[in-house]
Image 1 (tube, rainbow, N blue to C red):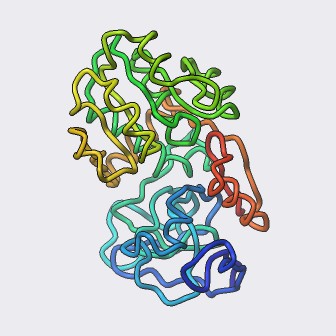
Image 2 (cartoon, rainbow, N blue to C red; image 1 turned 90 degrees about the vertical axis):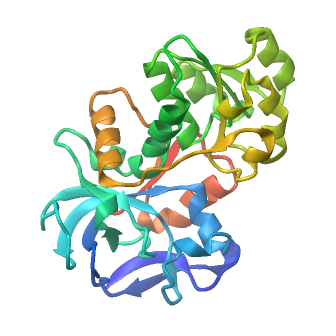
Length: 307
């Protein structure tokens, strides 16, 4: 039996609970891992709230929170290729196993080995934030010297996108609240504080001819406010707002396969993709870790160190 943090029904934070569960048995195409580190993401509380039912795997309650983790392979299900017992790996729990736990099952096609020299803590941040950064910038395909606006720069994905964009020699302007300024400016972002400045006015002053690309992580009214700042509407790409095509933009095209995980890991190992990890919580403090992300107060990436 191992401890896990999850939820007994769909709802708000009040449905969350610690519970013991036996190690899950890996099914076809799955690997059982002992978790070292789990990443915390806004998607986690969206799954708990029942907003994305396709990601819960249809498992009975209580369900474990979390979508990404790094750890060590303990057992293999049928039809698993390219991974072995004892491998240090990182990846997605796409079949509902959850990752705020001592053990879990990961989807093998969405799991990769951690390269030598890369820590499990960094690896645990790559399935969501790291590969999203790679995907959205590949989709934009901007040349060196181009300008990109990152709308909602302060979270784990926003900082990953910004850091990778700067590594590709793009000029990055980012919007966020006052608390997000320090980490954004530390990696070279020209920061616009939406709580104290007129975002559109400042952005137009900085980039009078319009942005070559906009990466949206905020959605809603904020997206609609900044979308007209793009030179071409098709180069507005949102990571969270499915209505972006109504504005002429596009939703991010995600690649969750092993090859993309390996690519993100290589970029991290080379120092091109550097996750900004701002908080490391023990599993016993998982409620606080998720609350920080759910309340919008997290700057950078929050992780849970299990082992």
